[in-house]
Length: 324
Length: 302
Image 1 (cartoon, rainbow over the protein chains, first blue to last red):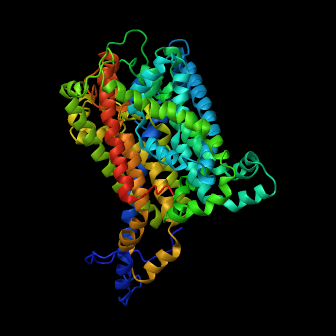
Image 2 (cartoon, rainbow over the protein chains, first blue to last red):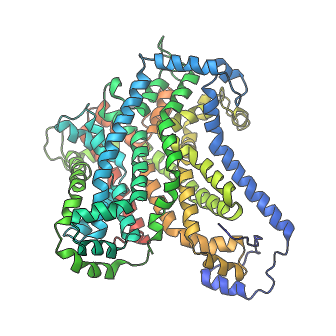
Image 3 (cartoon, helix red, strand yellow):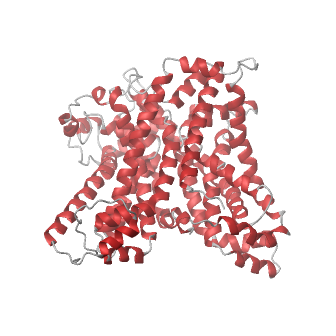
Protein backbone atom coordinates (compact mmCIF):
# COMPACT_ATOMS: atom_id res chain seq x y z
CA UNK A 1 0.00 0.00 0.00
CA UNK A 2 1.25 3.47 -0.75
CA UNK A 3 2.52 5.47 2.14
CA UNK A 4 0.89 8.80 2.79
CA UNK A 5 2.81 11.21 0.65
CA UNK A 6 2.41 14.90 0.09
CA UNK A 7 0.48 14.67 -3.10
CA UNK A 8 0.74 18.19 -4.40
CA UNK A 9 2.01 18.37 -7.93
CA UNK A 10 5.21 20.37 -7.98
CA UNK A 11 5.37 22.98 -10.70
CA UNK A 12 6.68 21.43 -13.86
CA UNK A 13 10.39 21.73 -14.42
CA UNK A 14 12.09 20.69 -17.63
CA UNK A 15 12.47 16.92 -17.36
CA UNK A 16 15.15 15.65 -19.58
CA UNK A 17 17.13 13.62 -17.08
CA UNK A 18 16.15 10.26 -15.78
CA UNK A 19 14.87 9.44 -12.37
CA UNK A 20 18.08 9.62 -10.39
CA UNK A 21 19.10 13.07 -11.50
CA UNK A 22 15.54 14.24 -11.01
CA UNK A 23 15.68 13.03 -7.46
CA UNK A 24 19.01 14.63 -6.67
CA UNK A 25 17.80 17.84 -8.19
CA UNK A 26 14.71 17.69 -6.09
CA UNK A 27 16.90 17.08 -3.08
CA UNK A 28 18.13 20.62 -3.30
CA UNK A 29 14.73 21.98 -2.59
CA UNK A 30 14.33 23.01 0.96
CA UNK A 31 10.69 23.18 1.74
CA UNK A 32 8.94 19.90 1.29
CA UNK A 33 6.08 19.97 3.70
CA UNK A 34 2.53 19.67 2.36
CA UNK A 35 2.30 23.39 1.98
CA UNK A 36 -0.97 23.72 0.22
CA UNK A 37 -3.62 21.50 1.74
CA UNK A 38 -6.30 23.07 -0.48
CA UNK A 39 -4.46 22.00 -3.56
CA UNK A 40 -4.01 18.54 -2.22
CA UNK A 41 -7.71 18.21 -1.48
CA UNK A 42 -8.65 19.28 -4.97
CA UNK A 43 -6.17 16.79 -6.36
CA UNK A 44 -7.76 13.99 -4.38
CA UNK A 45 -11.19 15.16 -5.46
CA UNK A 46 -10.13 15.06 -9.09
CA UNK A 47 -8.57 11.63 -8.69
CA UNK A 48 -11.64 10.37 -6.90
CA UNK A 49 -13.98 11.57 -9.60
CA UNK A 50 -11.87 10.04 -12.37
CA UNK A 51 -11.94 6.70 -10.56
CA UNK A 52 -15.70 7.04 -10.07
CA UNK A 53 -16.37 7.83 -13.72
CA UNK A 54 -14.57 4.63 -14.64
CA UNK A 55 -16.51 2.64 -12.06
CA UNK A 56 -19.70 3.79 -13.79
CA UNK A 57 -18.25 2.91 -17.18
CA UNK A 58 -17.26 -0.59 -16.11
CA UNK A 59 -20.22 -1.44 -13.88
CA UNK A 60 -23.24 0.25 -15.45
CA UNK A 61 -23.54 -2.14 -18.42
CA UNK A 62 -23.28 -5.17 -16.11
CA UNK A 63 -25.92 -3.73 -13.81
CA UNK A 64 -28.19 -2.94 -16.74
CA UNK A 65 -27.78 -6.47 -18.05
CA UNK A 66 -28.72 -7.98 -14.68
CA UNK A 67 -31.85 -5.86 -14.50
CA UNK A 68 -32.81 -6.29 -18.15
CA UNK A 69 -33.33 -10.00 -17.64
CA UNK A 70 -36.17 -9.27 -15.19
CA UNK A 71 -38.21 -7.11 -17.55
CA UNK A 72 -40.48 -7.46 -20.52
CA UNK A 73 -39.43 -6.05 -23.84
CA UNK A 74 -41.94 -3.25 -23.38
CA UNK A 75 -40.53 -2.32 -19.97
CA UNK A 76 -37.06 -2.37 -21.49
CA UNK A 77 -38.03 0.29 -24.01
CA UNK A 78 -40.37 2.47 -21.97
CA UNK A 79 -39.42 1.91 -18.34
CA UNK A 80 -36.61 3.32 -16.25
CA UNK A 81 -33.37 1.81 -17.59
CA UNK A 82 -32.11 0.88 -14.13
CA UNK A 83 -35.32 -0.44 -12.61
CA UNK A 84 -36.09 -3.94 -11.49
CA UNK A 85 -38.86 -5.74 -13.37
CA UNK A 86 -40.25 -8.70 -11.47
CA UNK A 87 -39.22 -12.20 -10.53
CA UNK A 88 -42.14 -13.66 -12.43
CA UNK A 89 -41.01 -11.90 -15.60
CA UNK A 90 -37.56 -13.35 -15.03
CA UNK A 91 -39.14 -16.80 -14.81
CA UNK A 92 -41.15 -16.14 -17.98
CA UNK A 93 -38.01 -15.05 -19.79
CA UNK A 94 -36.24 -18.18 -18.62
CA UNK A 95 -39.06 -20.38 -19.95
CA UNK A 96 -39.09 -18.56 -23.26
CA UNK A 97 -35.30 -18.86 -23.50
CA UNK A 98 -35.18 -22.57 -22.70
CA UNK A 99 -38.09 -23.06 -25.07
CA UNK A 100 -35.97 -21.81 -27.97
CA UNK A 101 -35.20 -24.85 -30.14
CA UNK A 102 -36.21 -27.20 -27.30
CA UNK A 103 -33.67 -26.11 -24.74
CA UNK A 104 -30.83 -25.34 -27.11
CA UNK A 105 -29.30 -22.96 -24.57
CA UNK A 106 -28.86 -25.78 -22.04
CA UNK A 107 -27.30 -28.00 -24.65
CA UNK A 108 -24.90 -25.19 -25.63
CA UNK A 109 -23.94 -24.63 -22.01
CA UNK A 110 -23.22 -28.33 -21.63
CA UNK A 111 -21.11 -28.25 -24.78
CA UNK A 112 -19.14 -25.25 -23.54
CA UNK A 113 -18.48 -26.95 -20.22
CA UNK A 114 -17.38 -30.16 -21.89
CA UNK A 115 -15.03 -28.44 -24.34
CA UNK A 116 -13.56 -26.06 -21.77
CA UNK A 117 -12.97 -28.67 -19.10
CA UNK A 118 -11.52 -31.38 -21.33
CA UNK A 119 -9.10 -28.92 -22.90
CA UNK A 120 -8.26 -27.49 -19.49
CA UNK A 121 -7.30 -30.93 -18.18
CA UNK A 122 -5.10 -31.66 -21.20
CA UNK A 123 -3.54 -28.20 -20.97
CA UNK A 124 -2.59 -28.67 -17.34
CA UNK A 125 -1.30 -32.21 -17.82
CA UNK A 126 0.99 -31.10 -20.63
CA UNK A 127 1.99 -27.52 -19.90
CA UNK A 128 2.94 -27.80 -16.24
CA UNK A 129 5.53 -30.57 -16.81
CA UNK A 130 6.75 -28.71 -19.90
CA UNK A 131 7.23 -25.44 -18.03
CA UNK A 132 8.93 -27.33 -15.23
CA UNK A 133 11.34 -29.05 -17.60
CA UNK A 134 12.15 -25.81 -19.41
CA UNK A 135 12.96 -24.09 -16.14
CA UNK A 136 14.60 -26.81 -14.09
CA UNK A 137 16.31 -29.24 -16.42
CA UNK A 138 18.86 -29.17 -19.20
CA UNK A 139 18.36 -30.89 -22.50
CA UNK A 140 19.20 -30.37 -26.13
CA UNK A 141 16.81 -28.08 -27.89
CA UNK A 142 15.62 -26.51 -24.67
CA UNK A 143 16.39 -22.98 -25.78
CA UNK A 144 14.83 -23.55 -29.19
CA UNK A 145 11.67 -24.81 -27.54
CA UNK A 146 11.57 -21.77 -25.29
CA UNK A 147 11.88 -19.36 -28.20
CA UNK A 148 9.31 -21.30 -30.22
CA UNK A 149 6.92 -21.10 -27.29
CA UNK A 150 7.37 -17.35 -27.06
CA UNK A 151 6.82 -16.82 -30.76
CA UNK A 152 3.70 -18.97 -30.87
CA UNK A 153 2.41 -17.32 -27.72
CA UNK A 154 2.56 -13.92 -29.34
CA UNK A 155 1.08 -15.16 -32.59
CA UNK A 156 -2.58 -14.22 -32.93
CA UNK A 157 -4.24 -17.61 -32.79
CA UNK A 158 -7.20 -16.59 -34.92
CA UNK A 159 -4.96 -16.12 -37.95
CA UNK A 160 -4.31 -19.85 -37.84
CA UNK A 161 -7.97 -20.80 -37.82
CA UNK A 162 -8.30 -21.28 -41.58
CA UNK A 163 -5.06 -23.33 -41.91
CA UNK A 164 -6.13 -25.33 -38.86
CA UNK A 165 -9.43 -26.04 -40.55
CA UNK A 166 -7.61 -27.45 -43.57
CA UNK A 167 -5.31 -29.52 -41.40
CA UNK A 168 -8.13 -31.00 -39.29
CA UNK A 169 -10.21 -31.53 -42.40
CA UNK A 170 -7.40 -33.68 -43.79
CA UNK A 171 -7.62 -35.97 -40.74
CA UNK A 172 -11.45 -35.90 -40.73
CA UNK A 173 -11.87 -34.26 -37.35
CA UNK A 174 -14.08 -31.36 -38.48
CA UNK A 175 -17.42 -31.49 -36.73
CA UNK A 176 -16.07 -33.48 -33.78
CA UNK A 177 -15.30 -31.95 -30.42
CA UNK A 178 -11.59 -32.72 -30.92
CA UNK A 179 -11.45 -30.11 -33.67
CA UNK A 180 -11.65 -27.45 -30.99
CA UNK A 181 -10.55 -29.29 -27.84
CA UNK A 182 -7.10 -30.15 -29.17
CA UNK A 183 -6.29 -26.65 -30.48
CA UNK A 184 -7.55 -25.20 -27.17
CA UNK A 185 -5.37 -27.66 -25.25
CA UNK A 186 -2.31 -26.25 -26.97
CA UNK A 187 -1.67 -23.30 -24.66
CA UNK A 188 1.86 -21.86 -24.90
CA UNK A 189 1.00 -19.01 -22.54
CA UNK A 190 0.47 -21.63 -19.83
CA UNK A 191 3.88 -23.13 -20.53
CA UNK A 192 5.47 -19.69 -20.37
CA UNK A 193 3.79 -18.89 -17.05
CA UNK A 194 4.87 -22.17 -15.46
CA UNK A 195 8.37 -21.68 -16.83
CA UNK A 196 8.61 -18.23 -15.25
CA UNK A 197 7.14 -19.50 -12.03
CA UNK A 198 9.50 -22.42 -11.61
CA UNK A 199 12.58 -20.48 -12.62
CA UNK A 200 11.87 -17.74 -10.09
CA UNK A 201 9.95 -19.23 -7.19
CA UNK A 202 11.44 -22.69 -6.79
CA UNK A 203 15.12 -22.96 -5.80
CA UNK A 204 17.06 -25.55 -7.75
CA UNK A 205 18.88 -26.63 -4.62
CA UNK A 206 15.61 -27.94 -3.29
CA UNK A 207 15.34 -30.31 -6.24
CA UNK A 208 18.99 -31.27 -5.95
CA UNK A 209 18.48 -32.14 -2.31
CA UNK A 210 15.57 -34.40 -3.21
CA UNK A 211 17.72 -36.13 -5.82
CA UNK A 212 20.50 -36.73 -3.33
CA UNK A 213 17.91 -38.27 -1.05
CA UNK A 214 17.30 -40.78 -3.79
CA UNK A 215 14.23 -39.33 -5.43
CA UNK A 216 13.64 -40.27 -9.07
CA UNK A 217 13.21 -37.52 -11.66
CA UNK A 218 9.49 -38.10 -11.75
CA UNK A 219 9.42 -38.21 -7.97
CA UNK A 220 11.15 -34.84 -7.77
CA UNK A 221 8.51 -33.36 -10.04
CA UNK A 222 5.58 -35.10 -8.38
CA UNK A 223 6.61 -34.74 -4.72
CA UNK A 224 8.64 -31.54 -4.63
CA UNK A 225 7.86 -29.30 -7.59
CA UNK A 226 4.16 -29.96 -8.07
CA UNK A 227 3.04 -29.14 -4.51
CA UNK A 228 4.93 -25.86 -4.77
CA UNK A 229 3.27 -25.02 -8.05
CA UNK A 230 -0.33 -24.72 -6.84
CA UNK A 231 -0.58 -20.96 -7.49
CA UNK A 232 0.63 -21.23 -11.05
CA UNK A 233 -1.55 -24.26 -11.75
CA UNK A 234 -4.57 -22.28 -10.58
CA UNK A 235 -3.50 -19.36 -12.73
CA UNK A 236 -2.95 -21.38 -15.90
CA UNK A 237 -6.20 -23.18 -15.24
CA UNK A 238 -8.04 -19.90 -14.88
CA UNK A 239 -6.66 -18.32 -18.04
CA UNK A 240 -7.11 -21.48 -20.04
CA UNK A 241 -10.69 -21.95 -18.88
CA UNK A 242 -11.64 -18.34 -19.67
CA UNK A 243 -9.93 -18.48 -23.05
CA UNK A 244 -11.65 -21.77 -23.93
CA UNK A 245 -15.04 -20.62 -22.72
CA UNK A 246 -15.00 -17.30 -24.53
CA UNK A 247 -13.49 -18.39 -27.84
CA UNK A 248 -15.77 -17.64 -30.75
CA UNK A 249 -13.94 -17.90 -34.06
CA UNK A 250 -12.62 -21.45 -33.77
CA UNK A 251 -15.90 -23.22 -32.91
CA UNK A 252 -17.70 -20.93 -35.36
CA UNK A 253 -15.55 -22.41 -38.11
CA UNK A 254 -15.07 -25.97 -36.90
CA UNK A 255 -18.54 -26.99 -35.72
CA UNK A 256 -21.20 -26.82 -38.39
CA UNK A 257 -24.19 -28.19 -36.45
CA UNK A 258 -26.32 -26.17 -34.06
CA UNK A 259 -26.39 -29.01 -31.52
CA UNK A 260 -22.61 -28.90 -31.16
CA UNK A 261 -22.19 -25.19 -30.61
CA UNK A 262 -20.70 -23.77 -27.44
CA UNK A 263 -22.81 -21.13 -25.77
CA UNK A 264 -20.73 -18.20 -27.07
CA UNK A 265 -21.56 -19.06 -30.66
CA UNK A 266 -25.05 -20.03 -29.59
CA UNK A 267 -25.89 -16.56 -28.34
CA UNK A 268 -24.88 -15.31 -31.76
CA UNK A 269 -27.64 -17.53 -33.14
CA UNK A 270 -30.03 -16.07 -30.56
CA UNK A 271 -29.01 -12.57 -31.58
CA UNK A 272 -30.05 -13.19 -35.15
CA UNK A 273 -33.43 -14.41 -33.86
CA UNK A 274 -34.26 -11.08 -32.25
CA UNK A 275 -36.70 -9.16 -34.48
CA UNK A 276 -35.33 -5.73 -33.49
CA UNK A 277 -31.89 -6.72 -34.75
CA UNK A 278 -33.01 -8.96 -37.59
CA UNK A 279 -36.41 -7.97 -39.02
CA UNK A 280 -36.52 -11.01 -41.30
CA UNK A 281 -36.91 -13.43 -38.41
CA UNK A 282 -40.28 -15.16 -38.34
CA UNK A 283 -42.18 -16.94 -35.60
CA UNK A 284 -39.10 -18.33 -33.85
CA UNK A 285 -38.39 -14.94 -32.35
CA UNK A 286 -36.49 -14.26 -29.15
CA UNK A 287 -37.11 -11.05 -27.23
CA UNK A 288 -34.39 -8.73 -26.09
CA UNK A 289 -34.74 -9.43 -22.34
CA UNK A 290 -34.39 -13.12 -23.15
CA UNK A 291 -31.23 -12.38 -25.07
CA UNK A 292 -29.94 -10.43 -22.06
CA UNK A 293 -30.73 -13.42 -19.87
CA UNK A 294 -28.94 -15.74 -22.27
CA UNK A 295 -25.88 -13.49 -22.11
CA UNK A 296 -25.96 -13.62 -18.32
CA UNK A 297 -26.30 -17.39 -18.31
CA UNK A 298 -23.45 -17.67 -20.79
CA UNK A 299 -21.03 -15.72 -18.60
CA UNK A 300 -22.01 -17.13 -15.21
CA UNK A 301 -19.37 -19.89 -15.14
CA UNK A 302 -16.60 -17.45 -16.00
CA UNK A 303 -17.89 -15.02 -13.40
CA UNK A 304 -17.89 -17.75 -10.76
CA UNK A 305 -14.33 -18.70 -11.66
CA UNK A 306 -13.41 -15.01 -11.49
CA UNK A 307 -14.70 -14.68 -7.96
CA UNK A 308 -13.14 -17.95 -6.94
CA UNK A 309 -9.69 -17.43 -8.45
CA UNK A 310 -9.24 -13.75 -7.70
CA UNK A 311 -6.89 -14.50 -4.85
CA UNK A 312 -4.49 -16.34 -7.11
CA UNK A 313 -4.59 -13.87 -9.90
CA UNK A 314 -2.51 -10.97 -8.73
CA UNK A 315 0.23 -13.13 -7.30
CA UNK A 316 0.32 -15.27 -10.40
CA UNK A 317 0.00 -12.60 -13.04
CA UNK A 318 2.99 -10.94 -11.47
CA UNK A 319 5.04 -14.09 -11.40
CA UNK A 320 7.21 -12.55 -14.12
CA UNK A 321 7.83 -9.34 -12.23
CA UNK A 322 9.67 -11.06 -9.44
CA UNK A 323 12.24 -12.33 -11.91
CA UNK A 324 14.97 -9.93 -10.97
CA UNK B 1 14.56 -9.04 -15.13
CA UNK B 2 18.26 -8.46 -15.20
CA UNK B 3 20.37 -10.76 -17.26
CA UNK B 4 19.92 -14.07 -15.57
CA UNK B 5 21.25 -14.86 -18.98
CA UNK B 6 24.94 -15.57 -19.07
CA UNK B 7 25.77 -17.50 -15.92
CA UNK B 8 22.54 -19.44 -15.63
CA UNK B 9 23.25 -22.21 -18.09
CA UNK B 10 26.76 -22.93 -16.88
CA UNK B 11 25.73 -23.14 -13.26
CA UNK B 12 23.06 -25.66 -14.04
CA UNK B 13 24.74 -28.01 -16.40
CA UNK B 14 26.67 -30.35 -14.07
CA UNK B 15 23.50 -31.44 -12.38
CA UNK B 16 21.40 -31.74 -15.49
CA UNK B 17 23.66 -33.74 -17.75
CA UNK B 18 23.25 -37.09 -16.09
CA UNK B 19 19.51 -36.85 -16.35
CA UNK B 20 19.21 -35.52 -19.85
CA UNK B 21 16.31 -37.86 -20.58
CA UNK B 22 14.06 -36.23 -17.99
CA UNK B 23 13.61 -32.89 -19.75
CA UNK B 24 12.55 -34.34 -23.11
CA UNK B 25 10.16 -36.73 -21.37
CA UNK B 26 8.46 -33.88 -19.56
CA UNK B 27 8.08 -31.70 -22.65
CA UNK B 28 7.13 -34.50 -25.07
CA UNK B 29 3.36 -34.04 -24.90
CA UNK B 30 3.57 -30.31 -25.22
CA UNK B 31 5.99 -30.54 -28.14
CA UNK B 32 3.53 -32.81 -29.90
CA UNK B 33 0.77 -30.20 -29.59
CA UNK B 34 3.19 -27.44 -30.54
CA UNK B 35 4.04 -29.26 -33.74
CA UNK B 36 0.44 -30.16 -34.53
CA UNK B 37 -1.24 -26.86 -33.73
CA UNK B 38 1.58 -24.31 -33.81
CA UNK B 39 4.02 -25.36 -36.52
CA UNK B 40 1.98 -27.51 -38.89
CA UNK B 41 -0.77 -24.89 -39.46
CA UNK B 42 1.93 -22.39 -40.42
CA UNK B 43 3.24 -24.96 -42.86
CA UNK B 44 -0.26 -25.41 -44.23
CA UNK B 45 -0.71 -21.66 -44.54
CA UNK B 46 2.56 -21.31 -46.45
CA UNK B 47 1.79 -24.26 -48.71
CA UNK B 48 -1.71 -23.10 -49.61
CA UNK B 49 -0.68 -19.48 -49.96
CA UNK B 50 1.79 -20.30 -52.70
CA UNK B 51 -0.22 -22.89 -54.62
CA UNK B 52 -3.51 -22.97 -56.47
CA UNK B 53 -6.52 -25.27 -56.08
CA UNK B 54 -4.75 -28.02 -58.04
CA UNK B 55 -1.68 -27.87 -55.81
CA UNK B 56 0.74 -26.38 -58.33
CA UNK B 57 3.08 -23.58 -57.37
CA UNK B 58 1.78 -20.13 -58.26
CA UNK B 59 4.29 -17.76 -56.69
CA UNK B 60 2.66 -14.65 -55.36
CA UNK B 61 -0.51 -14.96 -57.43
CA UNK B 62 -2.75 -15.53 -54.41
CA UNK B 63 -1.31 -12.50 -52.67
CA UNK B 64 -1.91 -10.36 -55.71
CA UNK B 65 -5.46 -11.59 -56.22
CA UNK B 66 -6.47 -11.05 -52.61
CA UNK B 67 -4.78 -7.66 -52.47
CA UNK B 68 -6.85 -6.63 -55.47
CA UNK B 69 -10.07 -7.64 -53.75
CA UNK B 70 -12.05 -4.46 -53.22
CA UNK B 71 -12.41 -5.15 -49.50
CA UNK B 72 -8.79 -5.87 -48.72
CA UNK B 73 -7.33 -2.37 -48.39
CA UNK B 74 -10.39 -1.22 -46.45
CA UNK B 75 -10.02 -4.10 -44.02
CA UNK B 76 -6.36 -3.23 -43.41
CA UNK B 77 -7.32 0.37 -42.75
CA UNK B 78 -10.08 -0.68 -40.37
CA UNK B 79 -7.87 -2.97 -38.35
CA UNK B 80 -4.99 -0.48 -38.28
CA UNK B 81 -7.19 2.35 -37.06
CA UNK B 82 -8.80 0.13 -34.48
CA UNK B 83 -5.40 -1.04 -33.24
CA UNK B 84 -4.21 2.53 -32.94
CA UNK B 85 -7.18 3.57 -30.80
CA UNK B 86 -7.14 0.39 -28.78
CA UNK B 87 -3.44 0.43 -27.92
CA UNK B 88 -3.42 4.15 -27.17
CA UNK B 89 -6.42 3.97 -24.88
CA UNK B 90 -5.00 0.92 -23.18
CA UNK B 91 -1.61 2.48 -22.44
CA UNK B 92 -2.95 5.86 -21.35
CA UNK B 93 -5.90 4.79 -19.25
CA UNK B 94 -4.58 1.54 -17.79
CA UNK B 95 -1.34 3.11 -16.61
CA UNK B 96 -3.13 6.25 -15.46
CA UNK B 97 -5.81 4.39 -13.54
CA UNK B 98 -3.33 2.01 -11.95
CA UNK B 99 -1.22 4.95 -10.75
CA UNK B 100 -4.28 6.75 -9.43
CA UNK B 101 -5.53 3.65 -7.65
CA UNK B 102 -2.12 3.04 -6.18
CA UNK B 103 -1.91 6.56 -4.85
CA UNK B 104 -5.30 7.56 -3.59
CA UNK B 105 -7.09 4.48 -2.38
CA UNK B 106 -5.71 2.03 0.04
CA UNK B 107 -7.24 -0.94 1.78
CA UNK B 108 -10.71 -2.15 1.00
CA UNK B 109 -11.59 0.77 -1.32
CA UNK B 110 -8.71 0.05 -3.66
CA UNK B 111 -9.47 -3.64 -3.67
CA UNK B 112 -13.15 -3.02 -4.37
CA UNK B 113 -12.36 -0.62 -7.20
CA UNK B 114 -9.95 -3.02 -8.82
CA UNK B 115 -12.51 -5.77 -8.62
CA UNK B 116 -15.24 -3.59 -10.12
CA UNK B 117 -12.96 -2.63 -13.01
CA UNK B 118 -12.15 -6.23 -13.49
CA UNK B 119 -15.67 -7.68 -13.62
CA UNK B 120 -16.40 -6.99 -17.31
CA UNK B 121 -13.50 -9.30 -18.11
CA UNK B 122 -15.89 -12.14 -17.38
CA UNK B 123 -17.95 -10.97 -20.37
CA UNK B 124 -15.15 -11.42 -22.88
CA UNK B 125 -16.06 -12.51 -26.38
CA UNK B 126 -19.57 -12.56 -27.75
CA UNK B 127 -21.16 -11.55 -24.43
CA UNK B 128 -19.43 -8.15 -24.39
CA UNK B 129 -20.58 -7.41 -27.91
CA UNK B 130 -24.18 -8.23 -27.02
CA UNK B 131 -24.04 -6.00 -23.96
CA UNK B 132 -22.74 -3.12 -26.03
CA UNK B 133 -25.29 -3.65 -28.76
CA UNK B 134 -27.81 -2.86 -26.04
CA UNK B 135 -25.76 0.05 -24.66
CA UNK B 136 -25.51 1.56 -28.11
CA UNK B 137 -29.14 1.13 -29.09
CA UNK B 138 -30.86 4.38 -28.13
CA UNK B 139 -34.24 2.67 -27.71
CA UNK B 140 -33.09 0.60 -24.72
CA UNK B 141 -29.77 2.10 -23.66
CA UNK B 142 -29.43 3.45 -20.11
CA UNK B 143 -27.35 6.26 -21.57
CA UNK B 144 -29.69 7.06 -24.43
CA UNK B 145 -29.85 10.72 -23.34
CA UNK B 146 -26.08 10.88 -23.61
CA UNK B 147 -26.20 9.26 -27.03
CA UNK B 148 -28.92 11.73 -27.97
CA UNK B 149 -26.87 14.72 -26.88
CA UNK B 150 -24.07 13.43 -29.07
CA UNK B 151 -26.53 13.45 -31.96
CA UNK B 152 -27.29 9.74 -32.11
CA UNK B 153 -30.99 8.95 -32.09
CA UNK B 154 -31.16 5.60 -33.83
CA UNK B 155 -29.08 2.43 -33.68
CA UNK B 156 -28.24 3.00 -37.34
CA UNK B 157 -26.68 6.37 -36.58
CA UNK B 158 -24.60 4.94 -33.76
CA UNK B 159 -23.12 2.17 -35.87
CA UNK B 160 -22.27 4.38 -38.83
CA UNK B 161 -19.04 3.12 -40.46
CA UNK B 162 -16.95 6.03 -39.19
CA UNK B 163 -17.80 5.22 -35.58
CA UNK B 164 -16.87 1.57 -35.66
CA UNK B 165 -13.17 1.79 -34.68
CA UNK B 166 -14.15 3.81 -31.61
CA UNK B 167 -17.01 1.47 -30.74
CA UNK B 168 -14.82 -1.63 -31.02
CA UNK B 169 -12.20 0.13 -28.92
CA UNK B 170 -14.78 0.88 -26.24
CA UNK B 171 -15.92 -2.75 -26.21
CA UNK B 172 -12.39 -4.13 -26.09
CA UNK B 173 -11.36 -1.64 -23.41
CA UNK B 174 -14.43 -2.41 -21.35
CA UNK B 175 -13.63 -6.13 -21.22
CA UNK B 176 -9.85 -6.03 -21.30
CA UNK B 177 -8.67 -3.03 -19.33
CA UNK B 178 -9.62 -4.28 -15.87
CA UNK B 179 -7.30 -7.24 -15.99
CA UNK B 180 -4.40 -5.07 -17.06
CA UNK B 181 -5.18 -2.52 -14.35
CA UNK B 182 -4.88 -5.34 -11.82
CA UNK B 183 -1.56 -6.37 -13.37
CA UNK B 184 -0.17 -2.82 -13.42
CA UNK B 185 -1.33 -2.21 -9.88
CA UNK B 186 0.42 -5.36 -8.74
CA UNK B 187 3.56 -4.32 -10.61
CA UNK B 188 3.40 -0.94 -8.87
CA UNK B 189 3.20 -2.74 -5.56
CA UNK B 190 6.32 -4.64 -6.49
CA UNK B 191 8.34 -1.44 -6.71
CA UNK B 192 10.35 -1.48 -3.48
CA UNK B 193 8.98 1.01 -0.99
CA UNK B 194 12.43 2.40 -0.27
CA UNK B 195 12.66 3.65 -3.85
CA UNK B 196 9.38 5.54 -3.49
CA UNK B 197 10.42 6.64 -0.03
CA UNK B 198 13.68 8.02 -1.43
CA UNK B 199 11.75 9.90 -4.11
CA UNK B 200 9.44 11.30 -1.47
CA UNK B 201 12.25 12.42 0.80
CA UNK B 202 13.88 14.07 -2.19
CA UNK B 203 10.72 16.09 -2.56
CA UNK B 204 9.25 14.47 -5.64
CA UNK B 205 5.52 15.01 -5.90
CA UNK B 206 2.94 12.65 -7.27
CA UNK B 207 3.53 13.57 -10.89
CA UNK B 208 7.29 13.44 -10.64
CA UNK B 209 7.26 10.11 -8.84
CA UNK B 210 4.90 8.69 -11.42
CA UNK B 211 6.75 10.02 -14.43
CA UNK B 212 10.35 9.51 -13.34
CA UNK B 213 10.16 6.52 -11.05
CA UNK B 214 7.01 4.45 -11.44
CA UNK B 215 6.38 4.56 -15.18
CA UNK B 216 10.00 3.68 -16.08
CA UNK B 217 9.77 0.74 -13.73
CA UNK B 218 6.48 -0.35 -15.31
CA UNK B 219 7.98 -0.24 -18.76
CA UNK B 220 8.35 -3.93 -19.33
CA UNK B 221 4.78 -4.54 -18.23
CA UNK B 222 3.54 -1.85 -20.59
CA UNK B 223 5.45 -3.49 -23.43
CA UNK B 224 4.04 -6.86 -22.46
CA UNK B 225 0.53 -5.44 -22.46
CA UNK B 226 1.00 -3.76 -25.83
CA UNK B 227 2.33 -6.95 -27.43
CA UNK B 228 -0.51 -9.10 -26.20
CA UNK B 229 -3.10 -6.45 -27.00
CA UNK B 230 -1.68 -6.09 -30.50
CA UNK B 231 -1.85 -9.84 -31.05
CA UNK B 232 -5.41 -9.85 -29.76
CA UNK B 233 -6.51 -6.75 -31.63
CA UNK B 234 -5.17 -7.82 -35.00
CA UNK B 235 -7.47 -10.82 -34.95
CA UNK B 236 -10.62 -8.73 -34.63
CA UNK B 237 -13.48 -11.03 -35.60
CA UNK B 238 -16.31 -11.54 -33.17
CA UNK B 239 -17.14 -7.86 -32.71
CA UNK B 240 -17.75 -6.95 -36.36
CA UNK B 241 -19.22 -10.39 -37.04
CA UNK B 242 -21.92 -10.03 -34.41
CA UNK B 243 -22.49 -6.42 -35.34
CA UNK B 244 -23.16 -7.45 -38.90
CA UNK B 245 -25.61 -10.06 -37.60
CA UNK B 246 -27.34 -7.40 -35.51
CA UNK B 247 -27.57 -4.91 -38.35
CA UNK B 248 -28.43 -7.45 -41.06
CA UNK B 249 -25.14 -6.89 -42.79
CA UNK B 250 -25.35 -3.10 -42.87
CA UNK B 251 -22.36 -2.54 -40.58
CA UNK B 252 -19.40 -4.71 -39.79
CA UNK B 253 -19.56 -7.06 -42.75
CA UNK B 254 -16.14 -7.91 -44.21
CA UNK B 255 -14.79 -5.35 -41.79
CA UNK B 256 -11.67 -7.07 -40.49
CA UNK B 257 -8.99 -9.17 -42.12
CA UNK B 258 -10.06 -12.29 -40.27
CA UNK B 259 -13.59 -11.90 -41.54
CA UNK B 260 -12.09 -11.62 -44.98
CA UNK B 261 -10.14 -14.87 -44.58
CA UNK B 262 -13.35 -16.51 -43.44
CA UNK B 263 -15.17 -15.20 -46.47
CA UNK B 264 -12.45 -16.26 -48.86
CA UNK B 265 -12.30 -19.75 -47.37
CA UNK B 266 -15.94 -20.55 -46.76
CA UNK B 267 -18.05 -18.25 -48.94
CA UNK B 268 -15.86 -17.96 -52.03
CA UNK B 269 -14.20 -21.38 -51.77
CA UNK B 270 -10.81 -19.75 -52.18
CA UNK B 271 -8.78 -21.58 -49.54
CA UNK B 272 -5.56 -20.40 -51.16
CA UNK B 273 -6.54 -16.76 -50.99
CA UNK B 274 -7.57 -17.20 -47.35
CA UNK B 275 -4.21 -18.80 -46.60
CA UNK B 276 -2.43 -15.88 -48.25
CA UNK B 277 -4.23 -13.32 -46.07
CA UNK B 278 -3.67 -15.46 -42.96
CA UNK B 279 0.02 -15.64 -43.75
CA UNK B 280 0.26 -11.87 -44.19
CA UNK B 281 -1.43 -11.28 -40.84
CA UNK B 282 0.86 -13.80 -39.25
CA UNK B 283 4.03 -12.25 -40.67
CA UNK B 284 2.98 -8.76 -39.59
CA UNK B 285 2.01 -9.78 -36.04
CA UNK B 286 5.09 -11.89 -35.47
CA UNK B 287 7.39 -9.16 -36.83
CA UNK B 288 5.79 -6.53 -34.63
CA UNK B 289 6.08 -8.82 -31.62
CA UNK B 290 9.68 -9.56 -32.58
CA UNK B 291 10.57 -5.89 -32.78
CA UNK B 292 8.98 -5.21 -29.41
CA UNK B 293 10.78 -8.13 -27.82
CA UNK B 294 14.14 -7.22 -29.30
CA UNK B 295 13.85 -3.54 -28.43
CA UNK B 296 12.63 -4.03 -24.89
CA UNK B 297 14.49 -7.25 -24.14
CA UNK B 298 11.39 -8.31 -22.32
CA UNK B 299 11.73 -12.00 -22.80
CA UNK B 300 15.38 -12.55 -22.11
CA UNK B 301 14.74 -16.24 -22.25
CA UNK B 302 17.88 -17.02 -20.29
